[in-house]
Image (cartoon, rainbow, N blue to C red; front, side, top):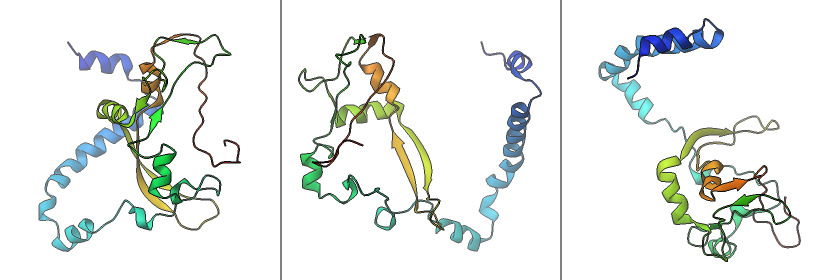
Length: 183
């Protein structure tokens, strides 16, 4: 089956990466008993930790929009109209007719195969990626907000189309206000 000793002999080299991996494992092992016995910690410390807010609530987040799309400030009815609400959202993935790329199953509104919100959420059950992100700007003194970003990797959506040949680039176009070019 899985031979850890053989793997460690084959894959471990005394490199900076190997040293850091061993150091991280040692640090985790060293602190494990301390974390396990944290119930004996000072109750004031436990209370202070419980009050920490790592994520910024939406009403307190500063959303930088670059002044073009204005999506963050659109009313719900407009979001629904332009397809950015869960009940109207869809995604099409099709080969460019000017190229020689082919896919077995394009995601298309006209074919009735476009990916909808429910389909995306089904993909997210298995392939969701989440990470904490601090939104900052080099012109500002403080971070704008700390949020949890979540999504489905684009490769999972591309694989739904069952690419066949010559798929080399992905171009996308999202919402843009009328009278303004896509950005």
